Amino acid sequence: MDENGATGPVPQTRKDATMEMTLDIVKLEAEVSKMISENMKLIAETRKLNAEASKMIRERAWYPMVAIGAAFASGAALAKLMIG
Image 1 (tube, rainbow, N blue to C red):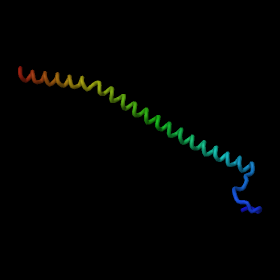
Image 2 (spheres, rainbow, N blue to C red):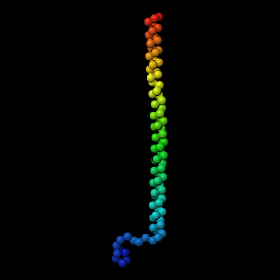
Image 3 (cartoon, rainbow, N blue to C red):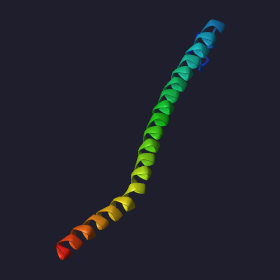
Image 4 (cartoon, rainbow, N blue to C red):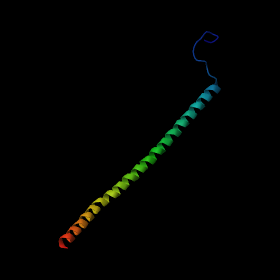
């Protein structure tokens, strides 16, 4: 209650309102900065995962060649044992 007997919020001065608005702006800037840093972290993680996926795709292309080479080598060794 104030001196007139009324209840409710105390009216703010222009300086108080400006200070409160400034604090809100600072809080918003901090939140935006945090979101930007989280976004950059996610972008870096995405790039890392894409690099790993590309590496796996490149390696997968070599597996049939290795299997054919191993089959050829084992066939040659078996033929040498049979002939030799």
